[in-house]
Length: 98
Image (cartoon, rainbow, N blue to C red; front, side, top):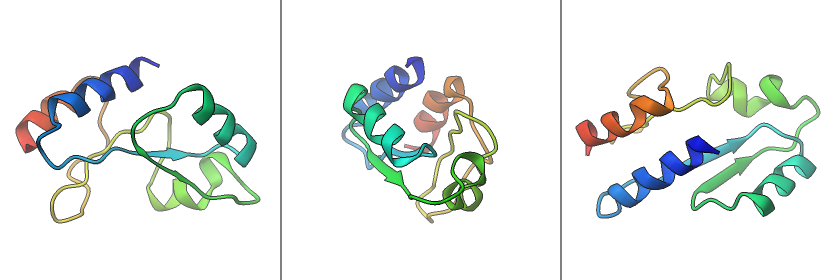
């Protein structure tokens, strides 16, 4: 919850810049829908239904998600600028990059 509040503050801070927040759900479909109904968040939400969810899901593998929460920035060249960030590092990195 604290991470979503911090991300909301970063979104407001950079509203005039090009910034998109993408949330990746590793839950099953039911869990994903349940969470989004209770914690609406202004972001693009990615979900891929699969047999093996969680850290074994194709999205987790593709995005190299090894723990939760995982934060990373994708730069203008559409490449990851940092391997991973903590929520405390996010705002400082956004200020540097934007």
